[in-house]
Image (cartoon, rainbow, N blue to C red; front, side, top):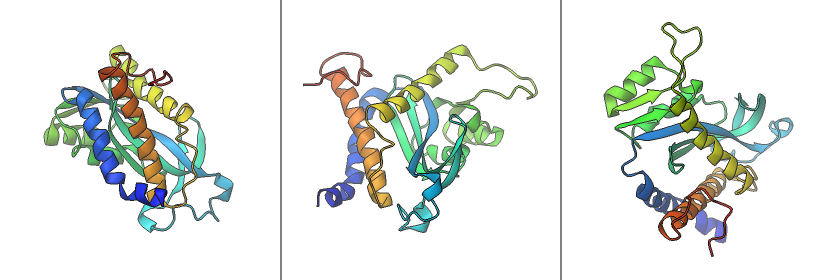
Length: 221
């Protein structure tokens, strides 16, 4: 009963998360985009697994994680956070979907800002489209063999690590990779609940206790 009620309230939960995030990000000009793998079962069991397969369009599949140099079966969590470390936009896709495809939908969620990403988001066509449609300046490292190669500014490379730290906190302290869901709605709601919990703690840290928002382990009672 509790899980069914929580799944029905997923949209309201996301609305609460966005309202909390707006207190941090309303006037933010710089954001960071990245993705992380979310495994639903071991690769060896993927052919017979029925987890999250009730809808074809939302079924998990096999993908590759360059950061871990490994293949896995499940989803990708795509996310955009401020340079301060507050999630603004999140989405899930099957593991095989390339990171660059997430940028096609991002224009509905942010605008008039600089978006910092890694080489997975390198695309001159997408970069031009984002700038022309919603004034988003996409900044990614160039490939070493590209014409007129320039190294990404150090400040951008440093800020890009903020979202990697957030992903680590979600894995270590919120156990976001621990999955007990059997349906995609259940899986999606669990992920959203953990990210909303993180944003809530950040809000309490800043606006109630006036301390570092990313001290996640500290007591809030």
